[in-house]
Length: 100
Ligand SMILES: [Zn+2]
Image 1: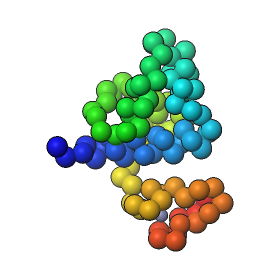
Image 2 (image 1 turned 90 degrees about the horizontal axis):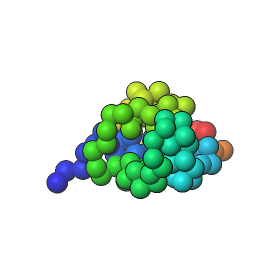
Image 3 (image 1 turned 135 degrees about the vertical axis):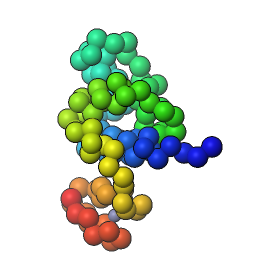
Image 4 (image 1 turned 180 degrees about the vertical axis):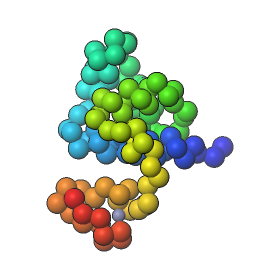
């Protein structure tokens, strides 16, 4: 089966933002549950970040809101395979030249 590209993009971009905030998957699961009155589901976050399965649009929407991102940004294809357009803070990527 071909890996769904849009899910992979969402997975990469969501994880980058989560890690930049210093949040664990457990923290995200807990915030998601309290913010949207839903059961706490850490497995969902892990699944989303694997990017291998289809995810519900509602989940995508809520996760984007939670992380403070525009959903459009989380769906923009990643250009650099090395840093995923997101080099570590204070470094620049030698392949694409991206800086942060
Ligand atoms: Zn790069």
